[in-house]
Image (cartoon, rainbow, N blue to C red; front, side, top):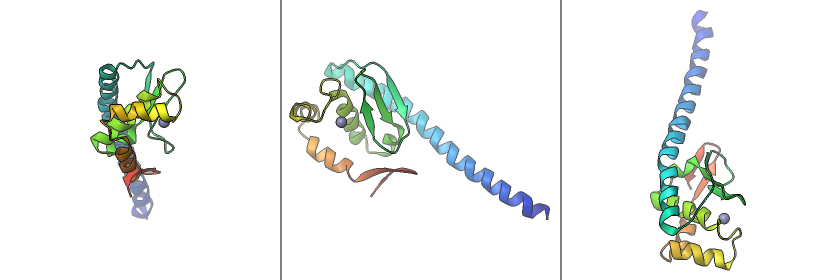
Length: 136
Ligand SMILES: [Zn+2]
């Protein structure tokens, strides 16, 4: 009787812990990697942003506000490094072009060494699911 009651509760607790730890670890990893990398890429290409936030949403890899704040999704840590850089550079370019017009793509392409289309295509192979980004 006791076992029957305790076992499911333990199982739930264990499941909660398993889910919570990787998320926190991923967030810590994202903060430690994405923020310095953003600073580095911004400095080397002459961009000035306002604040940076690490998010965990399912709607986008990153975003840039009119106030110059950059949001980066912690799920970026599940992507290859060059795609993380691509997303960071994409958001930095929005500091100068708050749209996806021709000038935006010209600027982004120049910062990606002419590989913007190729990297954009590669990024489409990944999606941000409810359980984090995964390759499809
Ligand atoms: Zn964009």
